[in-house]
Amino acid sequence: MSTITNVSLVRSIPSGAPTVADFKVSSAPTPAKESLRDGEILVRTLYLSCDPYMRGRLSGRKDSYVASFEPGKSLSGGGVGVVEASSSAKFSAGDIVTGADFQWRTVFVAPAAGFIKVPAAGAAEPVNVLGVFGMPSFTAYVGTVVLCKIKAGETILVSAASGAVGQMVVQLAKARGARVIATAGSDDKVQFVKELGADVVFNYKTVGDYEAAIRSAAPGGFQAYFDNVGGEFLDAVLKCISPNGRIAECGMISQYNATSETAYAIRNLSYVITSKLTIHGFIVSDYYAKPAYGEFVQEVSALLKDGKIQYKIDEVVGLENGPQALLDLFEGKNFGKRVVKVTGRSGRL
Ligand SMILES: NC(=O)c1ccc[n+]([C@@H]2O[C@H](COP(=O)([O-])OP(=O)(O)OC[C@H]3O[C@@H](n4cnc5c(N)ncnc54)[C@H](OP(=O)(O)O)[C@@H]3O)[C@@H](O)[C@H]2O)c1
Image (tube, rainbow, N blue to C red; front, top):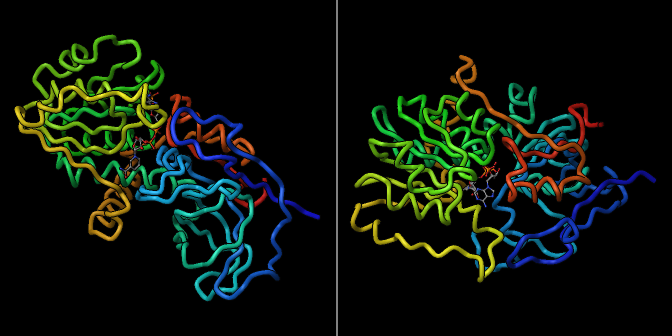
């Protein structure tokens, strides 16, 4: 009997750092095409996306904008795959599909309604659906362009700049003629972000005093901050950002594994008043139905065509390595957009 690989959650982890023992990698019988009910598709997974928001889904929280994973059930998230069989008029066998609810299974059956077909041009490089055109890349667009409205002559600071979101923030801001100050967590990552075009990049792990490092990187001040990390670095930014500064509050990864003992308490919130700051908290899913999404696809397509944008993918091979691939994000062990390559382009590894 042929089998598939399945990754499920063993237990919810409300706080602290999850470990691979909190996940179970198991085998299950391969679903048969004959088992499809009306409106369902059988999908072979090509790539799965590892994203920091999935930490919240491990927590068992019931009050989040996205449902928690249930212990005993497969994880799910962004993915791209090939339809092997369809009982839906929407798809045919061979179609490349994507969606935000890919099961962490090598092959799975799901209602067709949760998926969209990847156009032929994109299907040639399916990983781009999660990469340069993926959710984190669009997140960068929303924060940098829609909310911070960065423009030539201004300076933007971005943290976690070598990651899935950060690398696009750097390039979208440079494409608008802005000056970019960035941080990253290793010297290799610093070098990469400089090659993307950032004007000043520093390693926040070795720099010591954040406030001094930010002031030295931006002696003339900075008008915008794209926050991916929160915590102590955000606290220093609140003190240093120029009056009327705009902050795209995208993520706070430094706090995702925090406990009540280790959570960082912000001290400089009063600068929001005295420096007249605007903090835009946002969730990218709210923006797919807005004109911004079409504008993003158009701009990134043109930049790609002209060779003016690059996007670093960090691929881990094999679904059985999925739990570690995800947990690496919270230790900075990814370098670029982390994906799990589940099966090859042909559908077989
Ligand atoms: N609001 C939204 O809709 C939305 C959508 C997508 C993503 N996000 C957020 O955007 C942020 C970046 O996501 P991403 O997908 O681009 O991830 P990523 O940057 O590709 O990976 C996470 C990176 O965060 C850094 N990091 C990990 N632990 C850290 C810590 N304790 N302190 C400081 N930095 C730490 C590491 O980079 P270094 O090696 O440089 O430390 C790591 O590589 C996350 O906070 C995520 O939750 C928000």
